[in-house]
Length: 363
Figure 1: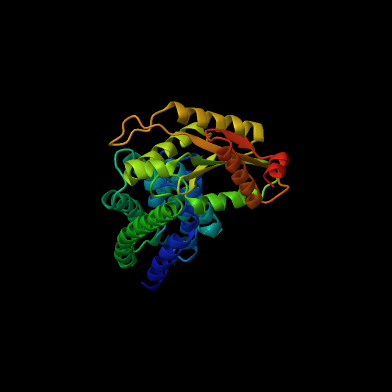
Figure 2: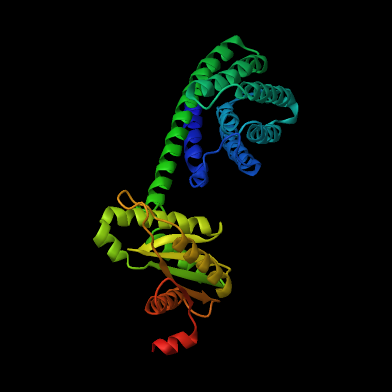
């Protein structure tokens, strides 16, 4: 009984610790990448191996809670995960088995193969739930009980061990599934909170905090990058004339427009008020100007309808800067701001690339 309790505690400690690396990963399923599912299988196999090293040796039988991590691997990752876990179990069983007790190894291998095959078939017709997980654990128990009797050669020993074996495996299956469910719910809640902390509530784009973090990241690399700072022309007039609700509608629509015009690796965010910032990694100033001009022309040609003004039109001014690592991201942002200021002073609805000549002219 004490050994089962130790196995029980070891199972949940290792589940908690070894599944932590998956906390920032999307929920693992049968559609996940093979690499992720194989890693999951290795983690489940490692848990099973640790349980085996702390298992109960009775005659040539070794009993523990190894079927629980195998069932976890199958339920979440399918055959690839379960096969990796099973292979690790078989290898460890071979390592732990003395030469004169190989009967136990052969029978254990047969059981694990039958167990994985059976629950693999079951997995094709069930979904992730407590009931189906416990069904898989029960299959493992039913396969294991005859093997335990064969290896112990004693009805009294078999009954003494099997009662604890059945009880602790079913209890471990129940608690393990609940633990994994709560861990995943906790991880997803953290991911959601982190996303909220990095997202502008009005536009759904990156907020200033995320933009500043991304600026620090691109600023720490040797690759050149460009920034495009955008400001809505006469936005105060929109708010004063049509109301702040209309202004919010314009900000949301402009955010979606800018996001639709950028590349997958670019980052668009609301930097504050009516200002937006586009971070363009590995992009020259000329390439950045093409993107800026595309955004400017698209905004000028389209309508930004609101509830009260269906034909509202706006324009934007843009400032562009490029950094090749010779100055900080803060300096690059200041240069984009100076270029934006020049665009607005020169009549608005235009884009300007920061140059030394521009800095001299403003000075």
